[in-house]
Image (cartoon, rainbow over all chains, first blue to last red; front, side, top):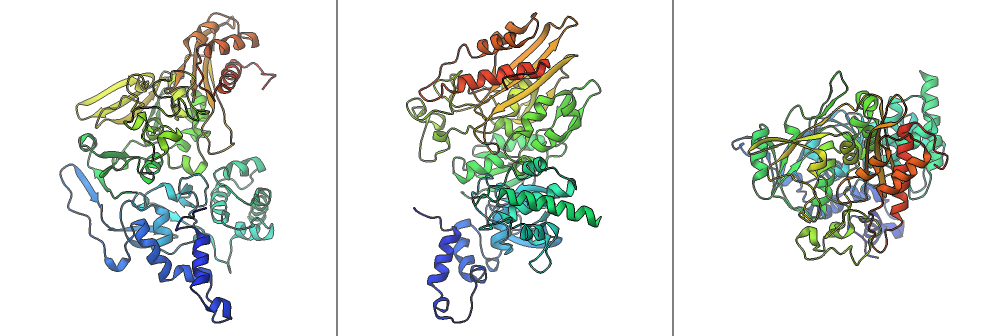
Length: 231
Length: 331
């Protein structure tokens, strides 16, 4: 079976093959830190039409008649509000929000899986509402508040929902978990006392290949209960 | 995905003028467009970003219950609107059952109406089918389990819009703005059969933009229903759907009927012969059954999709009973 160059398993193989220390008990290089290093960034840049920041981006061209703004087709500079901070990005207009989050801003918690809006692994919040970040252009996310899984909490300070995922063993491989968590946190924000049916509707756009849905639903119910008892 | 520029038009007239140029695409929610761009089924030089135009993302409701829906209203906005839910529940339900929560927060009403078909031959970038300027519809002799059972030929796509059958059933009209001005047409006339032009699904002319969808209030005492059958519970297009709007008089006879099916034909498929069965008669299960038989009487299945006929028939029968307030014991 041919695998896409963006396939995480392929990256893992490359990481193992190109890191002799991995077999010899040498200095520890985690898969995550390796992928965040130069290798992955350079490999992905050519594929996604992403230029490294050093290449610079053109300022928007002066508008022509009837045009308020013209961006691209080359790289352009723009600002995004991500997890409460303003981030400046240089990317072509064709780059998706998912592409910018992962490949420009290093926010790799948001996952690329189907790239067609079908699986929900790339779910982020746009002004609090869950959206598939693979199915929108990054430039269309300007002037919106974007929240990614990194904006909910970190391993040493997880929020109630993330804690509940751990407590209820709501993941196996974990690849769907960021998307599940984002879909559920948006739903729980608007509904502090959800029924199992409402939770199922909230994750109707998230596919779990391992089939941990019952534990995910338990985790969401537990998180909602924990939040209610604190309120 | 090929490179493209994205322009923000200063106003509607500029947007129409830009879109009339060759090799331009309109960008709204972008869901179907990004799908086509990623497959390189569309490779425009420039996207005209309709979100730069103000005021197209609102639902306005008149006191009598009529709706004016902006083309940039999202499917979730439509599904959650109290005004839509109250008087046009079949429209709200058709929006709520499309795609996934995440996609419904991006996808727009205008984009839902203008999206391209899901046919696997059309979506395959390596196949030049009739819709892409080729000489044959590969579904005819190929794999056609999801294709048209009504209105097909020479192309056998089914129209993928969930909203379109509901809008036709509610007698909605769509306003189109183009370089030569505006025109308003019935949603039923917006869609066009492949025998007119197999390469297109609607009558949008170069540069024309959907700027409003007007939905009149249904007649007094009319009730409506939307039902669809899918293989998956989420992120799936229907195998068949049905919308019914049914009004009863004081004697409980059907005085008003609209029956429209989705996912069975290249356009939303209204069934006047089924409506005729209902009109003037007292609504019961036997009558609903007869109307559903009439709705599918003209079906002409391909090799692998005859199974869709009883499914569509069941959707019509159940939607009639639901709108008529009659419990359906077989559902």
